[in-house]
Length: 336
Image 1 (cartoon, rainbow, N blue to C red):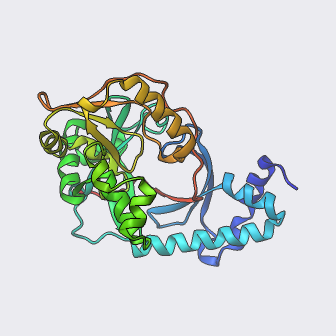
Image 2: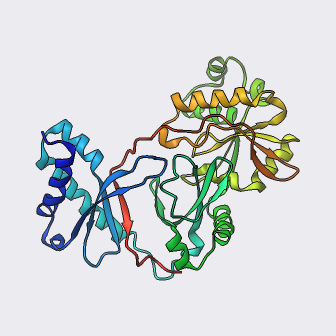
Image 3: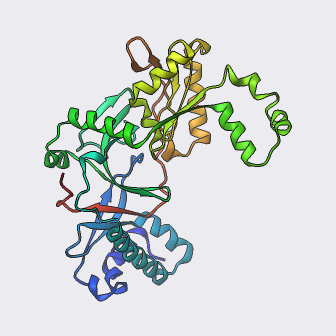
């Protein structure tokens, strides 16, 4: 069985042998790729077909794991070639229409600062407590997947936009494209159990009491309907409406990239204890690539700001990626 370094070179040298004639003039490049919520870069193989703006990146780390399981390099190569060809077909299907407005589809992305520092070092960003706001262009969405382009400093310059302009526009687009949703946790649990066919009596037994018994102390799930639903933290209108409803400030738990939890601040006597609990839950129950922060935030409805009120240890676990394929866009990116 080949070791990893030899495996990488063999894959690079042999991949074109498994692709049709139209790919034979492609350039095959090995490069390291920084991924969302991952501190250690992955080894990617780019198959750059002449005349194409979008090139698939196949992740060799995952391929090598498959090779270790099968010890069949021919099987791995044939599967990789199919992935590359399917990716180019998908790219053609997702080709932008001539009237597609890039600026209308710029949205923010919210991620943990420490974990994503390397990935974002050449990008326009701003700090949001222990998180970082960056920007991307949404190219297409469907079947639970989102195709997007990350905005680097060079791309922002091509668009003629400063970071402040990106932030203001991205937040406006976010509100338009991804409506916010605020739901009591108890209502979410009740609805989920009803969908599974449980009766009200069965739900009451499972919860140890009626839904009404828990309503007053129940946290709120706050999110928008994007793949990074926690970016609703940037929408102070949503937080202000909830704060006015509960009649006070909000304690916010930003533990997941998908949503945040909000509670009446008067109900939380010790936020440091809460932060320790968040840390424990994050590290044992939440997938590494889905973690956002171990901190506790406060929404102050007087100054309409979200502040970090604890300072527990930052996230440090490197997440595993579940997919081996992403895309790379060449320098002639879509314009305005």
